[in-house]
Amino acid sequence: MDLIATIDRQLDDLAARSLTRRRRVTDSACAPRQVVDGRELLAFCSNDYLGLAAHPRVIEALREGAQLYGAGSGASHLVSGHSRAHHLLEETLAEWMAPHLEQARALTMCTGYMANLAILSALGADAEAMIFSEALNHASLIDGARLAKAGVTVYPHGDVEALTKLLEASSASTKIVVTDSVFSMDGDLAPLPALLAACERHGAWLVVDDAHGFGVLGAQGRGALEHFGLRSANLIYMGTLGKAAGVGGAFIAAHASVIDLLVQRARPYIYTTACPPALAHVLLASLAIMGGDEGAERRAHLAALVEQLRGSLRLDRWNLAASTTPIQPVIIGSNDAALRAASALHAQGLWVPAIRPPTVAPGTARLRVTLSAAHALADVAQLAQALNELEKAAP
Image (cartoon, rainbow, N blue to C red; front, side, top):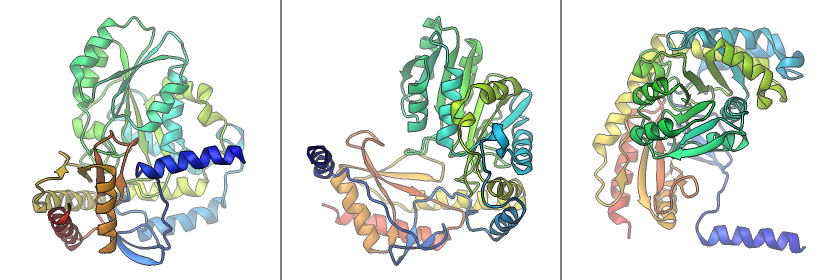
């Protein structure tokens, strides 16, 4: 029992620092109003930015996909699990990204986490390579860099000048710059045009994790590359399909040669069972919505909700982060204070998570508000009023 006692001491230490994590059980579909632990809450915590997770057309496509392909894939992509649905999805995603990538091809993955592990471990397989990682990158990018044989150096958040100096000083055989596009805990955008220009000058890859931009940014929802109007052979793009797309999975899009290399070398792709073909089938329906008139309408409504929230908050001691995306963090400071705020909102029927270290830096615990096109103006008004009153009453 000494082994268990050691773990218990670690758990007690987390509790003492207000760092214990807790799961909640939802009993209804992902939507603004959910039944959570038996109680209906107005949720501002999912990444279902376009409100497609419970869209009737998406649900019907899932039913159709299961009828066509069954429940599972049965094997990895390279054995027997690569279905026609996977093939069509990859072709569609390649077409989506073709305006921004040379000889674009796409590779689907089970999760964004696995996709990032695949890219960096495969591209950085040479010990003479160097990965230049953004300071606020997602954990999956950090872990992907750890798995690579390449060296790793971290450049300050959004600091293109510092990155440029690192690239100039590097003699690495392969240079790989990697960044989130939309930073998941702050909501701000990476300076992708300047980053790409630096990479092109210094012969480096630019790996863009667009998990929180795909479907949301750009006139057609094609993400950060469309938003900034970028096109380059130096780009490697990762987009997730479980956030704005409303379903699950992820994809990597890049030059055909890069995708060929990943198929041969990326262990998270080679050695895992392919996602159910039904999910690939339903994603085709989701993409059709995202890229059509309804998708444009949902993005416009989402932008209006962001503007409404930012215009309605009257915060003096808490800090609303500078974000134009659906991620609207309210930075409070201490872990205890953030937990108290989340608990007070929960008592009012509002579900907003408290985010604490190590996900964010010590002293910057926050409420991570996320908005969805499925929210109504009245929902956002209710949240803004609650936050304004809560800050005034907070000790």
